[in-house]
Length: 330
Ligand SMILES: C[S@@+](CC[C@H](N)C(=O)[O-])C[C@H]1O[C@@H](n2cnc3c(N)ncnc32)[C@H](O)[C@@H]1O
Image 1 (tube, rainbow, N blue to C red):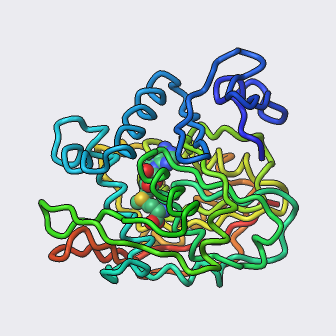
Image 2: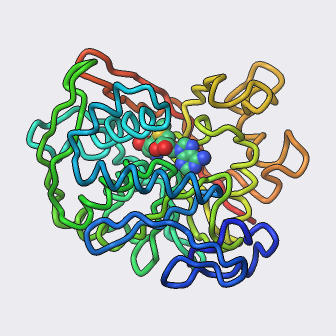
């Protein structure tokens, strides 16, 4: 699953030009930015390369001086506020259990029980991974053995901290110790989690414009992503295209729509008629509600009300209930 040029990919979805070692597209010659973290780089393949370049420079500054995080979180720039909040919430959610402070975190251990082993060849892709904790929860899983794992998110700050922890195995992580304060707690990954995470590829990408060829993923995992994008219908289409035949999509969502993020007409449950919303959303993702959408996906397993508890700070915990589906591409 070699990353391709997000600009050229729509025209050549099956065989897009791969970027060269310097991040340049051989077809359109765009040079894509990257964030250098230690000896590694995170390619920034958001469709707007100029915006990606600015974000890469900002996050490089934050890596150099992590005390800037407070300024970002309290500032006026909505992009920096979002980068800071994503890092703060999900660093704790994904790695809180391995911090010295023993920070509260949601239980993601159920993910392993949902990942089947009968999979075609292809990569495993975690979309909307934040700092990448889904992969730590899947450490040593047989379905991942010998498989390339790609962790992708649009929040470069969250990715940078995840990759830094994955490289070094130990790191101070930021968390909100009150509504207005940020504290740091040392985290150390256990050996199996460290080994699994260290082998992953990290890519800053927009899930609505994924920079990989069609059919290249054997597994796509998206936890709490569908209701955080501007166009969930486009996301379903993209995941369906990314999956190889026989590949699976493990999708979990609390359907916690926010009008400022997802415009009302794109919120998936608006397409469901009748009282059975849970069944309606299953039908929607398997081609039975909107013509063409999810037509190649079949429901293999389903659960409702899977708990997902996120601590925003010690006096504020959000308790979500996830609908979880395992969908297989025919
Ligand atoms: C609710 S958080 C969930 C994080 C993680 N999957 C988890 O469950 O703990 C949603 C994540 O999706 C990312 N995200 C939102 N829109 C995205 C997009 N268009 N492309 C890639 N990532 C996106 C956010 O940056 C954030 O990390």
